[in-house]
Amino acid sequence: MNDLASLLSQLGLADDPEGVRRFIHHHAPLGPRMRIEEAPFWTQAQADVLSACWLEDADWCDAFDQLNLALSLGPEDSA
Image (cartoon, rainbow, N blue to C red; front, top):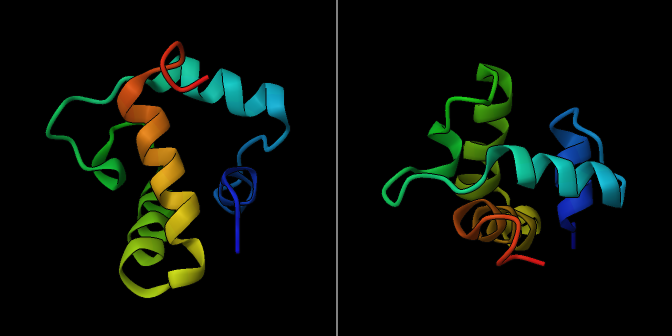
């Protein structure tokens, strides 16, 4: 199974605890109806990876869900 840090690494982002915290703090919360892969801060390549993680790769589902929850709740609620 892959975790949130591994997913962020796969996306080319900082995957250390502080990097994860900064990313969530900077980008959360998402709008209530925004799909994570449609968020405006992703590059097209990152959005494509997220779409593939959700649609095609069960190994990434837990990490995808963790990222989605963290970005939906915001930094204070996801700690």
